[in-house]
Image (cartoon, rainbow, N blue to C red; front, side, top):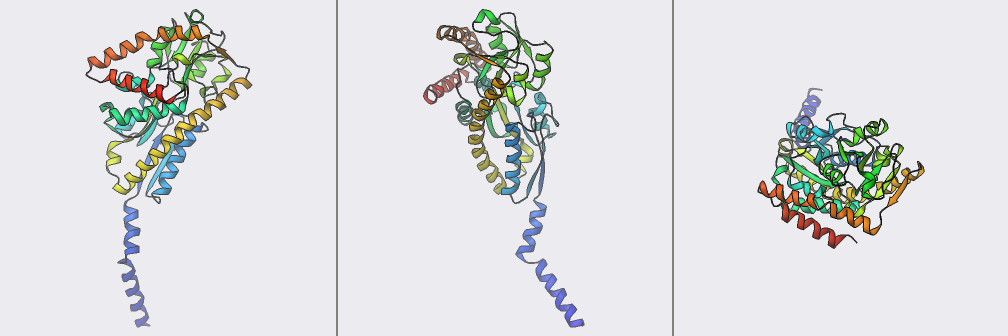
Length: 342
Protein backbone atom coordinates (compact mmCIF):
# COMPACT_ATOMS: atom_id res chain seq x y z
CA UNK A 1 0.00 0.00 0.00
CA UNK A 2 2.79 2.34 0.98
CA UNK A 3 4.53 1.57 -2.32
CA UNK A 4 1.39 2.57 -4.30
CA UNK A 5 1.13 5.87 -2.43
CA UNK A 6 4.76 6.71 -3.23
CA UNK A 7 4.15 5.96 -6.93
CA UNK A 8 1.14 8.30 -7.00
CA UNK A 9 3.08 11.09 -5.28
CA UNK A 10 5.92 10.65 -7.77
CA UNK A 11 3.52 10.90 -10.71
CA UNK A 12 1.98 14.08 -9.33
CA UNK A 13 5.43 15.65 -8.96
CA UNK A 14 6.39 14.67 -12.51
CA UNK A 15 3.18 16.15 -13.92
CA UNK A 16 3.69 19.39 -12.01
CA UNK A 17 7.03 19.80 -13.75
CA UNK A 18 5.84 18.80 -17.21
CA UNK A 19 5.68 21.31 -20.12
CA UNK A 20 1.90 20.89 -20.36
CA UNK A 21 1.41 21.85 -16.73
CA UNK A 22 3.82 24.82 -16.89
CA UNK A 23 2.02 26.04 -20.03
CA UNK A 24 -1.28 25.86 -18.15
CA UNK A 25 -0.02 28.00 -15.34
CA UNK A 26 1.64 30.46 -17.72
CA UNK A 27 -1.70 30.85 -19.52
CA UNK A 28 -3.43 31.56 -16.22
CA UNK A 29 -0.84 34.22 -15.37
CA UNK A 30 -1.16 35.83 -18.83
CA UNK A 31 -4.91 36.44 -18.53
CA UNK A 32 -6.05 39.99 -19.40
CA UNK A 33 -9.52 41.35 -18.70
CA UNK A 34 -10.53 44.57 -20.44
CA UNK A 35 -13.54 46.88 -20.91
CA UNK A 36 -14.73 48.10 -24.34
CA UNK A 37 -16.98 51.17 -24.68
CA UNK A 38 -19.04 52.38 -27.67
CA UNK A 39 -21.76 54.96 -28.24
CA UNK A 40 -23.72 52.70 -30.61
CA UNK A 41 -26.90 51.05 -29.28
CA UNK A 42 -26.60 47.30 -28.67
CA UNK A 43 -28.61 46.24 -31.77
CA UNK A 44 -26.82 48.64 -34.12
CA UNK A 45 -24.70 46.72 -36.62
CA UNK A 46 -21.60 48.76 -35.75
CA UNK A 47 -22.10 47.76 -32.12
CA UNK A 48 -22.47 44.12 -33.15
CA UNK A 49 -19.23 44.44 -35.15
CA UNK A 50 -17.26 45.66 -32.11
CA UNK A 51 -18.78 42.99 -29.93
CA UNK A 52 -17.71 40.37 -32.49
CA UNK A 53 -14.20 41.84 -32.51
CA UNK A 54 -14.05 41.35 -28.73
CA UNK A 55 -15.16 37.73 -29.12
CA UNK A 56 -12.69 37.14 -31.95
CA UNK A 57 -9.81 38.47 -29.83
CA UNK A 58 -10.80 36.11 -27.03
CA UNK A 59 -11.03 33.18 -29.45
CA UNK A 60 -7.76 33.80 -31.28
CA UNK A 61 -5.84 34.32 -28.02
CA UNK A 62 -7.29 31.09 -26.61
CA UNK A 63 -9.05 32.98 -23.84
CA UNK A 64 -5.99 34.87 -22.61
CA UNK A 65 -7.75 38.16 -23.41
CA UNK A 66 -11.34 38.68 -22.32
CA UNK A 67 -13.55 41.71 -22.85
CA UNK A 68 -16.53 43.15 -21.01
CA UNK A 69 -18.60 44.97 -23.63
CA UNK A 70 -20.50 48.23 -22.93
CA UNK A 71 -22.73 49.58 -25.77
CA UNK A 72 -25.00 52.66 -25.85
CA UNK A 73 -22.55 54.90 -23.93
CA UNK A 74 -23.15 52.84 -20.77
CA UNK A 75 -19.52 53.10 -19.64
CA UNK A 76 -18.38 56.46 -21.05
CA UNK A 77 -20.25 59.43 -22.59
CA UNK A 78 -19.30 59.66 -26.32
CA UNK A 79 -17.63 63.05 -25.93
CA UNK A 80 -15.44 61.67 -23.10
CA UNK A 81 -14.61 58.23 -24.49
CA UNK A 82 -11.19 59.09 -25.92
CA UNK A 83 -9.97 60.74 -22.72
CA UNK A 84 -11.54 57.94 -20.67
CA UNK A 85 -9.48 55.42 -22.62
CA UNK A 86 -6.32 57.47 -22.08
CA UNK A 87 -7.06 57.48 -18.33
CA UNK A 88 -7.95 53.77 -18.24
CA UNK A 89 -11.62 54.17 -17.31
CA UNK A 90 -12.27 52.15 -20.45
CA UNK A 91 -9.50 49.97 -21.84
CA UNK A 92 -10.59 50.34 -25.47
CA UNK A 93 -13.50 51.76 -27.36
CA UNK A 94 -15.07 53.72 -30.19
CA UNK A 95 -16.30 57.26 -30.57
CA UNK A 96 -16.14 60.31 -32.84
CA UNK A 97 -13.13 62.62 -33.25
CA UNK A 98 -15.35 65.68 -33.66
CA UNK A 99 -16.86 65.26 -30.19
CA UNK A 100 -13.51 66.51 -28.83
CA UNK A 101 -13.28 69.74 -30.83
CA UNK A 102 -9.77 71.11 -31.36
CA UNK A 103 -7.92 68.01 -30.11
CA UNK A 104 -7.55 66.31 -33.50
CA UNK A 105 -6.69 69.30 -35.68
CA UNK A 106 -4.93 67.49 -38.53
CA UNK A 107 -7.45 64.63 -38.65
CA UNK A 108 -10.27 67.13 -39.16
CA UNK A 109 -9.31 66.88 -42.83
CA UNK A 110 -11.44 63.72 -43.01
CA UNK A 111 -14.53 65.62 -41.81
CA UNK A 112 -14.25 68.30 -44.49
CA UNK A 113 -17.07 68.37 -47.10
CA UNK A 114 -14.93 66.59 -49.68
CA UNK A 115 -17.85 65.22 -51.68
CA UNK A 116 -17.87 61.63 -50.45
CA UNK A 117 -20.03 59.17 -52.38
CA UNK A 118 -19.64 55.90 -50.45
CA UNK A 119 -18.77 54.80 -46.96
CA UNK A 120 -16.40 52.15 -48.30
CA UNK A 121 -14.09 54.70 -49.90
CA UNK A 122 -14.13 57.13 -46.96
CA UNK A 123 -13.32 54.27 -44.56
CA UNK A 124 -10.37 53.18 -46.67
CA UNK A 125 -9.21 56.79 -46.97
CA UNK A 126 -9.04 57.50 -43.23
CA UNK A 127 -6.84 54.47 -42.61
CA UNK A 128 -4.55 55.34 -45.52
CA UNK A 129 -4.35 58.89 -44.15
CA UNK A 130 -3.32 57.55 -40.74
CA UNK A 131 -0.65 55.26 -42.19
CA UNK A 132 0.88 58.12 -44.19
CA UNK A 133 0.74 60.96 -41.65
CA UNK A 134 0.82 59.14 -38.26
CA UNK A 135 -0.62 62.25 -36.54
CA UNK A 136 0.93 62.88 -33.12
CA UNK A 137 -2.50 63.89 -31.80
CA UNK A 138 -3.19 60.13 -31.39
CA UNK A 139 0.15 59.23 -29.79
CA UNK A 140 -1.40 58.80 -26.33
CA UNK A 141 -3.36 55.69 -27.40
CA UNK A 142 -2.86 52.54 -29.44
CA UNK A 143 -4.83 52.99 -32.66
CA UNK A 144 -6.54 49.70 -33.52
CA UNK A 145 -8.29 51.03 -36.61
CA UNK A 146 -10.09 54.15 -37.80
CA UNK A 147 -13.31 54.47 -39.73
CA UNK A 148 -15.84 57.01 -40.94
CA UNK A 149 -19.54 57.25 -41.38
CA UNK A 150 -21.00 56.92 -44.85
CA UNK A 151 -21.58 60.30 -46.61
CA UNK A 152 -23.16 62.92 -44.35
CA UNK A 153 -26.12 64.79 -45.85
CA UNK A 154 -28.59 67.48 -44.82
CA UNK A 155 -31.81 66.07 -43.35
CA UNK A 156 -34.85 68.03 -42.19
CA UNK A 157 -37.96 67.31 -40.17
CA UNK A 158 -40.73 69.46 -41.64
CA UNK A 159 -39.50 71.36 -44.69
CA UNK A 160 -37.71 69.93 -47.76
CA UNK A 161 -34.53 71.69 -48.87
CA UNK A 162 -33.79 71.82 -52.60
CA UNK A 163 -31.81 75.08 -52.68
CA UNK A 164 -29.60 76.98 -50.29
CA UNK A 165 -32.24 79.60 -49.51
CA UNK A 166 -34.53 76.89 -48.09
CA UNK A 167 -32.18 76.10 -45.21
CA UNK A 168 -31.41 79.66 -44.13
CA UNK A 169 -32.39 80.29 -40.52
CA UNK A 170 -32.97 76.62 -39.71
CA UNK A 171 -31.44 75.06 -36.59
CA UNK A 172 -29.40 72.05 -37.69
CA UNK A 173 -27.90 69.39 -35.41
CA UNK A 174 -24.17 69.13 -36.05
CA UNK A 175 -20.80 68.54 -34.43
CA UNK A 176 -17.24 69.63 -35.11
CA UNK A 177 -16.57 70.41 -38.75
CA UNK A 178 -20.20 69.92 -39.77
CA UNK A 179 -21.11 73.00 -37.74
CA UNK A 180 -19.04 74.99 -40.24
CA UNK A 181 -20.87 73.33 -43.13
CA UNK A 182 -24.18 74.35 -41.57
CA UNK A 183 -23.00 77.94 -41.18
CA UNK A 184 -21.75 78.05 -44.77
CA UNK A 185 -25.27 77.15 -45.90
CA UNK A 186 -26.75 80.00 -43.85
CA UNK A 187 -28.26 77.88 -41.04
CA UNK A 188 -27.58 77.81 -37.31
CA UNK A 189 -25.63 74.82 -35.93
CA UNK A 190 -26.92 73.11 -32.78
CA UNK A 191 -24.13 71.06 -31.23
CA UNK A 192 -24.97 67.61 -29.86
CA UNK A 193 -24.08 63.95 -30.19
CA UNK A 194 -26.13 61.66 -32.42
CA UNK A 195 -27.44 59.98 -29.26
CA UNK A 196 -29.15 63.27 -28.30
CA UNK A 197 -30.58 64.07 -31.74
CA UNK A 198 -33.90 62.16 -31.54
CA UNK A 199 -35.26 64.12 -28.57
CA UNK A 200 -33.96 67.42 -29.95
CA UNK A 201 -35.72 66.88 -33.28
CA UNK A 202 -38.91 65.63 -31.69
CA UNK A 203 -39.09 68.66 -29.37
CA UNK A 204 -38.20 71.20 -32.06
CA UNK A 205 -34.85 72.12 -30.50
CA UNK A 206 -33.46 71.33 -33.96
CA UNK A 207 -35.16 71.57 -37.37
CA UNK A 208 -32.84 69.12 -39.03
CA UNK A 209 -29.49 67.38 -38.83
CA UNK A 210 -26.31 66.61 -40.70
CA UNK A 211 -26.12 62.82 -40.68
CA UNK A 212 -25.31 59.69 -42.71
CA UNK A 213 -28.32 57.80 -44.02
CA UNK A 214 -27.63 54.80 -41.75
CA UNK A 215 -28.60 56.89 -38.71
CA UNK A 216 -32.19 57.01 -39.97
CA UNK A 217 -32.49 53.38 -38.90
CA UNK A 218 -29.54 52.88 -36.54
CA UNK A 219 -30.71 55.66 -34.20
CA UNK A 220 -34.38 55.59 -35.35
CA UNK A 221 -34.06 59.15 -36.68
CA UNK A 222 -36.18 58.25 -39.71
CA UNK A 223 -39.12 58.58 -37.32
CA UNK A 224 -38.48 62.32 -36.82
CA UNK A 225 -36.65 63.31 -40.03
CA UNK A 226 -38.78 63.28 -43.17
CA UNK A 227 -36.58 64.81 -45.90
CA UNK A 228 -33.03 64.00 -47.05
CA UNK A 229 -31.31 66.45 -49.39
CA UNK A 230 -28.94 64.64 -51.75
CA UNK A 231 -26.08 67.14 -51.57
CA UNK A 232 -23.37 64.63 -52.46
CA UNK A 233 -21.10 67.27 -54.01
CA UNK A 234 -20.57 68.75 -50.53
CA UNK A 235 -21.07 65.55 -48.52
CA UNK A 236 -18.80 65.08 -45.52
CA UNK A 237 -17.83 61.98 -43.53
CA UNK A 238 -17.38 61.84 -39.78
CA UNK A 239 -14.06 60.38 -38.65
CA UNK A 240 -14.26 57.83 -35.84
CA UNK A 241 -11.73 55.84 -33.87
CA UNK A 242 -11.31 52.42 -32.30
CA UNK A 243 -8.38 52.77 -29.90
CA UNK A 244 -6.87 51.14 -26.81
CA UNK A 245 -5.23 52.41 -23.65
CA UNK A 246 -1.51 52.57 -24.41
CA UNK A 247 -0.33 51.25 -21.05
CA UNK A 248 -2.65 48.24 -21.29
CA UNK A 249 -1.49 47.64 -24.87
CA UNK A 250 2.21 47.81 -23.90
CA UNK A 251 1.62 45.24 -21.14
CA UNK A 252 0.42 42.63 -23.64
CA UNK A 253 2.80 39.88 -24.83
CA UNK A 254 4.14 40.29 -28.36
CA UNK A 255 2.20 37.33 -29.73
CA UNK A 256 -1.11 38.81 -28.55
CA UNK A 257 -0.19 42.20 -30.01
CA UNK A 258 0.47 40.52 -33.35
CA UNK A 259 -2.91 38.76 -33.25
CA UNK A 260 -4.76 42.00 -32.49
CA UNK A 261 -2.88 43.97 -35.16
CA UNK A 262 -3.74 41.32 -37.76
CA UNK A 263 -7.37 41.40 -36.70
CA UNK A 264 -7.52 45.19 -36.85
CA UNK A 265 -6.46 45.11 -40.52
CA UNK A 266 -9.25 42.62 -41.18
CA UNK A 267 -11.79 44.82 -39.41
CA UNK A 268 -10.90 47.87 -41.52
CA UNK A 269 -12.33 45.98 -44.48
CA UNK A 270 -15.33 44.67 -42.52
CA UNK A 271 -16.19 48.12 -41.19
CA UNK A 272 -15.79 49.74 -44.63
CA UNK A 273 -18.23 47.30 -46.22
CA UNK A 274 -20.61 47.58 -43.28
CA UNK A 275 -21.18 51.34 -43.63
CA UNK A 276 -22.53 50.99 -47.17
CA UNK A 277 -24.67 48.03 -46.14
CA UNK A 278 -26.32 49.92 -43.29
CA UNK A 279 -26.85 52.92 -45.56
CA UNK A 280 -29.06 50.66 -47.68
CA UNK A 281 -30.92 49.57 -44.55
CA UNK A 282 -31.32 53.21 -43.50
CA UNK A 283 -32.77 54.06 -46.92
CA UNK A 284 -35.31 51.24 -46.69
CA UNK A 285 -36.34 52.24 -43.16
CA UNK A 286 -36.66 55.89 -44.18
CA UNK A 287 -38.87 55.11 -47.17
CA UNK A 288 -41.04 52.78 -45.10
CA UNK A 289 -41.66 55.68 -42.74
CA UNK A 290 -42.79 57.86 -45.65
CA UNK A 291 -39.55 59.82 -45.98
CA UNK A 292 -38.60 61.58 -49.22
CA UNK A 293 -35.26 62.14 -50.92
CA UNK A 294 -34.77 65.63 -52.34
CA UNK A 295 -32.30 65.88 -55.26
CA UNK A 296 -30.31 69.00 -56.09
CA UNK A 297 -29.95 70.20 -59.64
CA UNK A 298 -26.43 69.99 -61.04
CA UNK A 299 -26.16 73.79 -60.83
CA UNK A 300 -27.40 73.91 -57.23
CA UNK A 301 -25.05 71.11 -56.15
CA UNK A 302 -22.13 73.06 -57.64
CA UNK A 303 -23.33 76.15 -55.80
CA UNK A 304 -23.18 74.27 -52.48
CA UNK A 305 -19.67 73.06 -53.32
CA UNK A 306 -18.52 76.66 -53.91
CA UNK A 307 -20.01 77.70 -50.56
CA UNK A 308 -17.68 75.23 -48.83
CA UNK A 309 -14.53 76.98 -50.12
CA UNK A 310 -13.85 79.10 -47.00
CA UNK A 311 -13.99 75.97 -44.81
CA UNK A 312 -11.04 74.46 -46.70
CA UNK A 313 -9.13 77.77 -46.53
CA UNK A 314 -9.69 77.96 -42.78
CA UNK A 315 -8.49 74.38 -42.27
CA UNK A 316 -5.26 75.07 -44.14
CA UNK A 317 -4.70 78.31 -42.21
CA UNK A 318 -5.37 76.69 -38.82
CA UNK A 319 -3.12 73.68 -39.40
CA UNK A 320 -0.32 75.85 -40.80
CA UNK A 321 -0.45 78.03 -37.69
CA UNK A 322 0.09 74.91 -35.58
CA UNK A 323 2.93 73.64 -37.75
CA UNK A 324 0.86 70.77 -39.13
CA UNK A 325 0.88 69.54 -42.76
CA UNK A 326 -2.78 70.36 -43.36
CA UNK A 327 -2.37 71.41 -46.97
CA UNK A 328 -0.52 68.18 -47.74
CA UNK A 329 -3.17 66.12 -45.92
CA UNK A 330 -5.97 67.85 -47.82
CA UNK A 331 -4.26 67.28 -51.17
CA UNK A 332 -3.70 63.62 -50.26
CA UNK A 333 -7.40 63.14 -49.47
CA UNK A 334 -8.61 64.94 -52.59
CA UNK A 335 -6.30 62.91 -54.84
CA UNK A 336 -7.33 59.66 -53.14
CA UNK A 337 -11.02 60.39 -53.74
CA UNK A 338 -10.39 61.45 -57.32
CA UNK A 339 -8.63 58.16 -57.97
CA UNK A 340 -10.90 55.82 -56.01
CA UNK A 341 -14.47 57.04 -56.39
CA UNK A 342 -16.46 57.52 -59.56
